[in-house]
Length: 259
Image (cartoon, rainbow, N blue to C red):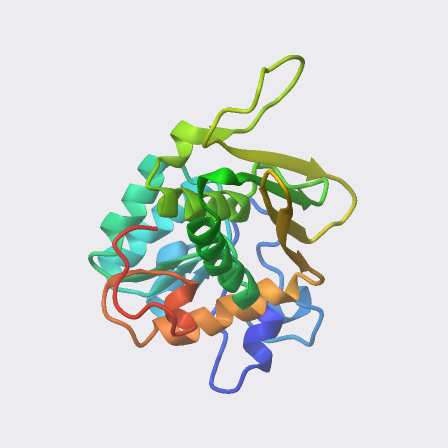
């Protein structure tokens, strides 16, 4: 989908693509992999060669691979867009360090609408206050390996930021048996897996007399590819720093201090 999006966007040209060493796609034509005609570009495994040949790189891989790519991008001064999720706090710090040397954009979700949802969550948290319990519900396809999703954690982090608390300290991710009453100030997470669900996210504000639900449902994965290419087009013109989709959409000018 990323390949198809690049091919279809005026002003963009595909420089190449890589797979992990030993991957089944290595040697295959990138255009044919994307369901189109041959492009004369074969899938490789040499990240350094790809980075040198590119003006900007898009990475949807694994946390470990993305960290290696961030370091490589920093050493070469190449802008890097990362859509990988599942980073731990130390890995987020490593991304921030790489961003001091090159433009780096990380987002748990490349959808403009999800960016707006995050901002609505912040506003609702601010306006509704501590009388409302916050629960985050997400559902994805059966093959997703991490839970809660990166987007769900980003939504929870947005609420925690407004409340001035550390998400890790207040999150509740497992409830089974007799866990007792809900902790005051907790942010709960529930993850569902099944079928081919692209991605559903809801943030529920449950008060003593009513309930507010903010929901986003992705209908097609092309949504994320389109957002990533849009981000890459924007990032290629930026100075070193750590950015997110808010900057791409013009909501938050300047360099972000943390992912």
